[in-house]
Length: 258
Ligand SMILES: [Fe+2]
Image 1 (cartoon, rainbow, N blue to C red):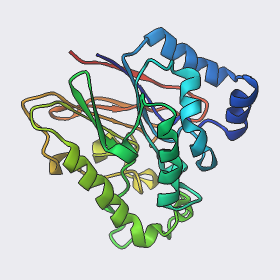
Image 2: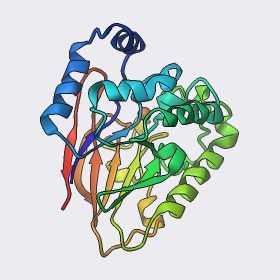
Image 3: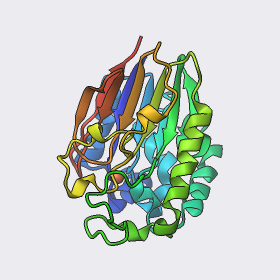
Image 4: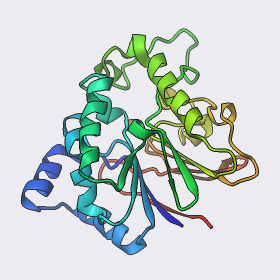
């Protein structure tokens, strides 16, 4: 199976509107379209920060503009898609789109989908506090990320984390390879940055070893968020892909399994 990994496309809102309404494209959008066509993948995994929060309701249409309808899409949201409204409102907007295209699988809603003998599991995945650079650091006192835009993040982030960790745990299947797809990092070694400002709110310190991965099988970790490319067996026993796209700079990775 050929899996095309995309992440952090950060499509600008005016470019998305033009693209959907007038077919007008940008060089970046054309590059994405050409990459999908060139790879001709069996599945495309898109791990979040694709559009801005206000365009979450258009996400399915946007994805289908550059990914043909017969190719399954496994997608998570990123922190940018959750900004500006409550967690529940964002998921409601996402859910309304699932009626339109049965071949797009939003892990933030369903937790997992089995395709080609692989169990794609995940969701955006938030922050467990273990990567803060000071022990006492509050997440609302940081000025490097605009996390204050996530409603009630201070009181509710542990609840969000539990939502995702519980969902992942409930969807993992013994005897089946897991492809864990998250926007935020499931392990600190996928960060790609030295411990610094970017360590904050970048993911779980070591979620991987808290989950019941079946060691008899190859398992895979696909993520994004930090805009730094990390590819390989960074964590023993797991093939890791932090795609590493940046604003208007496309990176992708093709994972060939089997
Ligand atoms: Fe992000």
